[in-house]
Image (cartoon, rainbow, N blue to C red; front, side):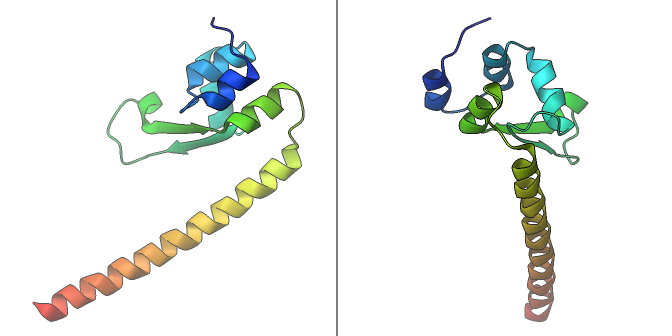
Length: 114
């Protein structure tokens, strides 16, 4: 396992599951499972159900360097993270609703023009 310093993590363009696992001293699979099951509050795991691939490949991970570092040192507030994630979920749902409305309007406009 490679050893990463806090500065190494901050300077990563993208913190991968492997890098996070090496940093925390756990396997990359444990990092992915922890994120997917909301047990490891170091970023976001997004499941893309439209991808026709193996289950593990249908997930995308966004690991936030500062959250990973804070988690390692026990300085992350689980309550604060849950509140932020709940608010983000609400925002995402609103955007999805707006997207649906916009697509409907665009499809109606396309029918009128034809």
